[in-house]
Image (cartoon, rainbow, N blue to C red; front, side):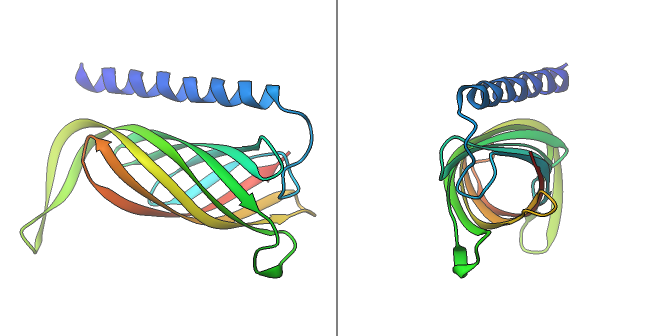
Length: 175
């Protein structure tokens, strides 16, 4: 019963984030962001893999929602990002950095028992984390896609109590 409650809670939270993101998109004008596009959706591969939706709310600010999977669970990350163009003097390459939050539910956890052995603990837990992001993104204008590489350090305030750095490669379709 406990597993079902966590899954239902996660789905409700994911839907709330998606509805909020859709509302924010509907409220904005049709101008493009500083990267040359307005909205992109795609996949994210790395420690925390999943789907990603990124939408510019001004020329250099974007909201990103990531629904990811890790440790036999699901999590939702919401980020506010600043995006600065012409990174490394390349016209469609941009820096991105920002802050956000993550909430997720997981089943099981591996941890180091002493210095040599990994032990698996079978339990359900929910996490709430503060998340940062820093990376680069390139916009392939001819084939409306972006390719992003980023690092996302986080600190769990509820749940594990851990911190770590996620690394990922994101591939998004621009529309």
